[in-house]
Length: 296
Picture 1 (cartoon, rainbow, N blue to C red):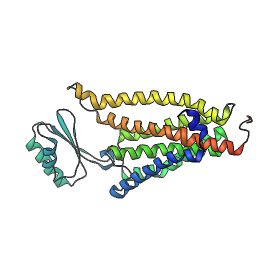
Picture 2 (picture 1 turned 180 degrees about the vertical axis):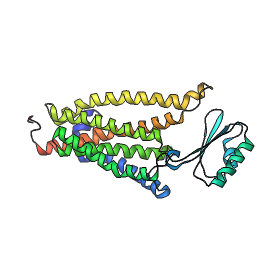
Picture 3 (picture 1 turned 30 degrees about the vertical axis):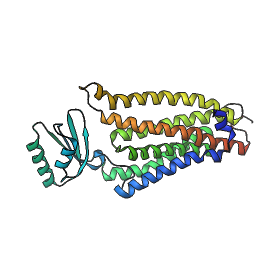
Picture 4 (picture 1 turned 60 degrees about the horizontal axis):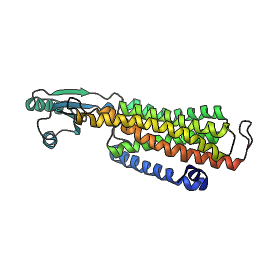
C-alpha cells in the first residue's frame, strides 16, 4: 500500500481507528498496573527506596532467589560474573538480618541501602504540574500557528506517545527510574518536533492537504529511521555485547532507556502520521479556509 493510499484513499475517521485502538490498549495496561501496584508503571528503586546487593554468580539464579525468599525481593539480574539483587523497603531488623545472611554466604558481596530519590511529595508535585506543562505547550504552538485545532492535535499526539511508551514498560518489565524518566522526556521533545514539522508543512506550503502531508512524510520518516537506527545500536550494545565479550557486563540502564525509546518512536510514527496527519486532513478539508495568507 502506497503513501497516497494511506493518506487520501480512506476517510480520516476510518484510518484513526488504528491509533485509537493502540491508545485504548495502553490505557488498559496502565490501569491494570495501577490497580495492582498503586502506580501506572512499576517504580524503580529511585522512587521506592530499598537495598541493592551484588554477589558473585557462583550458583543458579533460582537458588539465589530461594535463598532470599524471606525478604522483599524485587528483582535479580545476571550482570556477567555477578548477580545484582534488588530488595524493596524493609525494617531495620530485616535489613540487619539480610546483611548478616549475605556476608555469611558470600565473600565479596556488596550491600547498599538507597533511600527514595523522588519523595512522595515530589511525585505528587510532578503529577500536579505535568498537565500544566502540556497546557503551556499547547499555548506555545497556538501562538506560532494561530490554530486551536493544531495545538490540540500536537498535545494529543505527544500524550499518546508517552502513554504508549509507558504501557510498553509494563509489558517488557522496565521500571520507572532516572534513566527511563529521561527517555520519556526525550520522547516528548521528539514528538513535538515531528508534529511541528507536519503542521508547518501543512499550514505554510501550497498544494492540497494530502500532497503536503505526503511531502512531510518523506522528511519525517527519514528522521525517524535514523533515530531508530541509533537506538537499535544501543539495544545491541547494551543487551548483546556482553555475550560476545566476556569482560563486558549488561548495561541495564542503557537497555531500559533504549527499550522505552524504541517503543516511543514506533508510537510516534502512528501518532504523528496517522493521528495528527488525519486530524489535520479532516480539519483543513472541513474548514476550507485560508491559513496565514494562503488560499486553498
